[in-house]
Amino acid sequence: MFRRLTALLATALITACLAGCQSTDHWVEAKPSDGWAAQYRDASNSSYTPRAGATDLRFEWNRSVKGELGAGVALGSGNYLAVNAQTPAGCSLMVWESDNLGRQRWCTRLVQGGGFASPLFDGFDNVYIGQPGAILSFPPTQWIRWRQPVIGMPLTPRILDPGQLLVVTHLGQVLVYDAHRGVVVGTALDLVAGVDPKDPQRGLEDCQPARPQCPVAAAPAFSPASSLVVLGLWEPGAEQPVLLGLRYRPGQTPIMAREWRSDAVGGGPIASPVLSADGTTVYVNGRDERLWALDAADGTAKWSVPLDYLAQTPPSVSPDGLIVAGGGPGAKLTGIRDHGDRGEVLWTRDDVEPLTTSSQAGADVAYTVMRDGDGQTLLVFSPGDGSTLNSYPLQRASGWPVGVSVGADGRVVAATSAGVVYGFAPA
Image (cartoon, rainbow, N blue to C red; front, top):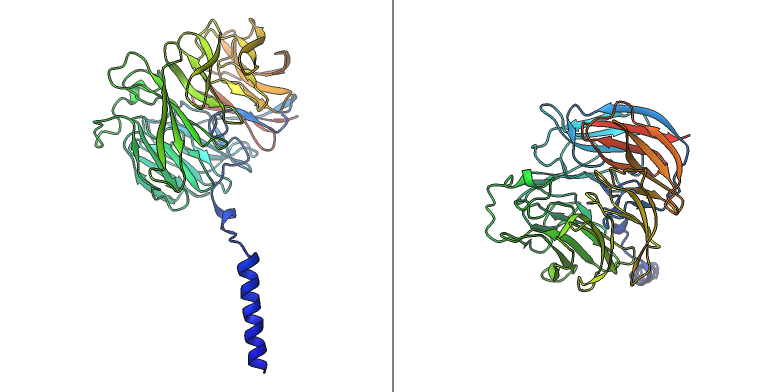
């Protein structure tokens, strides 16, 4: 009788578990950090965080990478900061503590030549970064989790579904990896034919200035809302680049497929595209000095507005369609509203020359680095009307700024191409 009761109880427990128990593996799958996970913050390149930014900041520290920087700083969910430097010797990939005067936790040297791509932090403080010919992942220590060969230099990686890592190289290879194990999911998609896999550095010198020998010069954008990847592609022999839309199809073969090709952008796109929060609109700078909005379903133009300058960095876009146009030499700080069928210029600051993409922190605060005489200043402004809220000169800044990152703790980090990183905390 006791054995029968025990068997019945075990059967009941198993049946109940099968009916109600679910796998809890999802919590260990890689997701972007809660901070500024990579350059332009998220996979859609929005340069927007819902966390309300501080208008009053306190300068805490600056530190040199002893080399050059070509991409913005990545911030983890906690206090970790990662930079991908180009250094004459010694370490190049560095992880510091943003809340501890930039104290270094660890560093390692990567193959040089890919400084235009930023690291990516996931929510467990694992780092994903490319070097010519390979994509690598590091745990919160400097020991390699995994390393896989690729054709070309990986641009800034993106997390697709939890646990799925998108890698696009400058030579047009598109791969999806299991972020934990580092194995390819599905098959690779090659956007350019006839590429020599033994020459991953071919055309790298054309990537920063976005010239023809670098087929994919800027990081792709991905929308989880529409499962669409958008990137610029300079096809061999073409007079100008085009935009491509790729469909991410988890569980299907192929896992990534071409959806559309668009030459709607005047002069061709420059810098990374940005996808709206609902995944229906692509925003991108044109070489014709206009900001373009395209239908993400087929790549056709919705509207464009003249900027009257060549924006060399992507716009930032809030979930409700407030756009701050990209920056660069000769730029004007400009706010634009997307009304669906048209874009409206809300305000323009002729007295402010933003040199970076503006980073929006909530509805009321944004940050950019502007030219200030012969120097540079971190500007805090209202994205609603462009008014100045505060400003902080960057001490002895040289080169050009590579971006402003906003942490989960409200800290603000700016960096320059000369390799100096500046840390600010809410006052």
